[in-house]
Length: 344
Image 1 (tube, rainbow, N blue to C red):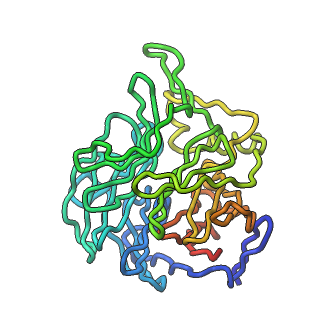
Image 2: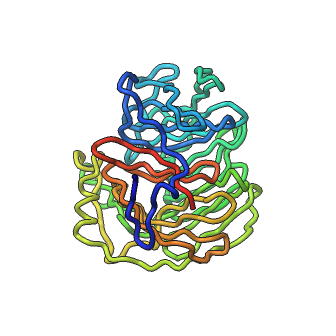
């Protein structure tokens, strides 16, 4: 019987809604680094793998169907590289069409309901990095974007049209997650690890955009027109940054073998860095360690009242992801990736 130890409560078989069938040995690829998830209009579950550079698919009952996309630079192929940071890729289903953003060439590919490649188009914002992306209609995209090369670096959460201009800006902040040091050939970027950052989520089930700055134990909920519906305050405290936290960050694969980035650590972590909607009932608000080894936080209702604390140990490369108000845990179990939908 599956048992996961969580601070505050246990999750047993009765708390797992669905376990996805393992990817078979006969498949072209295997799960390595799941980075995003999408539940489509047919109930199928798509998992984008940043390292395998493909998308795995299961049916609504968790039976493995297959995969689409492969490594490369051609039509229907992916690199999921990252501009100024680690790899990035995002996917969404809109009316039966699957949209896949590839952060390497900064392209948006579309696939039909039967998983056939249709087309790829440039998705070019000004120089910077996409930190979160969800296609919300045939020609509109919700993007959390960090601009690195403007005179004053900033973060923007906005809905962009097909001309790559913002139609609705939800929030715009100065980007305080990094700064430059040195000059000329000696110039480096100093990253502020575990410090305050912006968390963004989309609740497709309720049509809401959730945005929080983790310097405070609260976040805002907007409707899709950009109107503030609610500020949710949560009972979180800040935790000390330990030597183990620093060691885990320094093992980050993209960070280890480069000379352009340095890091700074504060004495205490921000209150959280991730928010996942749970249906129309509440939110998971948590800190995820750098390599997603563990996720620690609380489950709150829509008013911010704590329902359960949790501390999920995922293992190196694990993750927690959400789609359509459903929550999925990716865990490393005996060197195999296990993906399960959790009940809350």
